[in-house]
Length: 333
Image 1: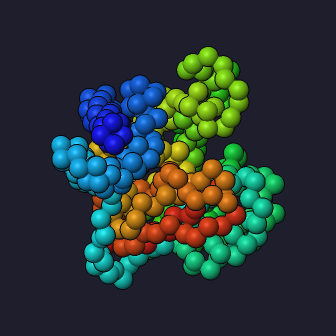
Image 2: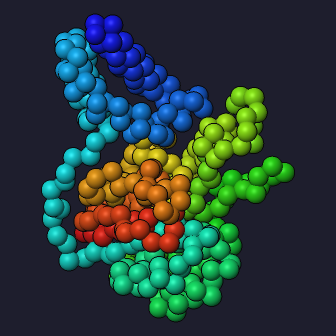
């Protein structure tokens, strides 16, 4: 019995040690190394075992292990667990925006369009709105007076006049990559010019392998090729554009960036507000491996400049996509 107890306490202590080392490495190096960046992306899953370590160490009567488990749990809650937010003050001057990656293989897009029309949004940004979707998406386009579709699958529809559209090159195409662009739309919202950036950043992977060939499996392939360098470079260019804006800014779309990634802090440092972090409740997970599975990461966002204010933010219900929509009410006052 003693050996059994010692075995499990040793196993839990090893996990505690590894978790502490991970947090130290993250604080020192951010996402510099691919494996550290991968751990950052899935940080919520790294801390899940903490849910068990406190009761198990108590059961095994490991006083020191229990103390360490409690300390690490408190740190994890402070770092990763969103606390309930008080209701924000109301505003008479708000706009509702929706960001939704409709997925290029969406089997129920007609139903999704019905849902979008029911939301009575003022501005909608769609990602992966590819050519074969356009006949269905025309229903949405016909409902809004102003719209623009960018080749490659980014679409914006708006009740407010779109004064201009600009293609923003986030990555120049070369022999290896097709490049990456965003759409900048300047809206006239009751006399206030607002710049809306519609984005779909690259998936964090590259053709290069980190270790010798192994048989293909989707999750293993993701680890094998995980690389944030392209996406992070695109974010740097995007933030450079946003930093030159004189108008209030909205940045909406699929960022392929977890809210626990190190690069997330660059948006905050640029003075931008994550609307869901400001006024949403829960983790706000928005992407799953496929539509039939629960979401595992939050990678869809509505960011805005600090001159705007989030009144309400929520993740929409499961539709036909592998992403969930983000719905945000924003005050202009």
